[in-house]
Length: 485
Ligand SMILES: [Zn+2]
Image (cartoon, rainbow, N blue to C red):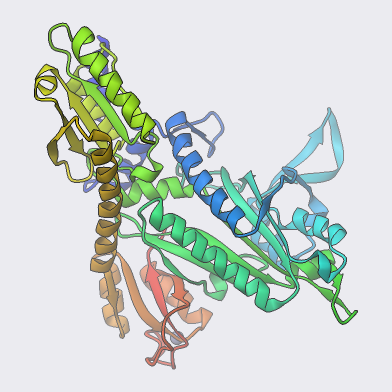
């Protein structure tokens, strides 16, 4: 089969989003070359185009984490089994997902090692050595790492056995400081999701049954995906003194008494790439917000006449101008593909702007610009092109965010009685805000009746006045319910 023909078949293989969202997602991940399956079940290979998105996101997070006073370090991949078992709730929560190393150097190990599912145990062990006095506090350390959680059902980026993330671990003098840190990071995560990924999130507290194993309180950011299901996009935990007590992290306080530190931990993962795909993608494939797009602009020269002498030099000149203007550009000058194929290909891969340039455009001293988000096409004069392109990129970033907000608002309903709740959850998906009494039994019953879980309870919400939709007892919170990933 000639290369172009094979490639054409390849591009048209995306299942329509409306037909099968889950298939559409997997098609986009593979066809856009974000990730591929690996020989290890449940583990994915993040391909260069997907990894470039991660790098942009990582830079944005890292800059903000450091600006908030944290420093990076690196802790080992392996943790002695005995350390994980020190915090009872923690081990109970993670034991089913832990991978063990039993042999090394051809011999059976005296003590099994676990491959970290998260690093509280090893940070705690080291903090116990490093922290002696109130003068040593706070300790604010972040690490960029991979973790392993053995999963039965996996999906690229959303749930994989190994994934990449950052995990922050902090130790403080007082409970108030730890709570302040936990919420500060939650705000930081929300800001990154909204400004970089153009993905609006709901910030709130998790219920007791959904909190992190071993934490005092867990907060999350929750986003609504294109199919109306919610996705937990990041979590921040106030660990209280639970880990400090388990790992004996004590310090001499200002009044000379010996006290346990107050801890936090928090993380976001490569799952955010899955979130961006499902928030903005359409039937033609990926739609990337410009701030996380590996290429913000693709230039496609139109091959007419002696284009390599006329069109191509002009295209290169434009590329250089854009690069100098801080724009990430790809010039697709491959002559083995037709312009039509390239249009479809870069549309599928979500590039925010496409510039078409041919002999006629050069005559008119303009280029044809196509927006990925609205599919609008406009002729833009070459004079002042860089400024105009930058404006358009900003406009696309804003348009995608506004669109996602509108989508969420249209799919968020307030409900005060259980019959309506069940009907709404059975029909059009999305968020349902409803009063809840705080009982785990009600929460479990609602989940078994409707598959909906409490995503979180916004910290900014007013005190609820209503009664629990399930049991009619006075409500303690307005909870945001949804079917979730
Ligand atoms: Zn209730």
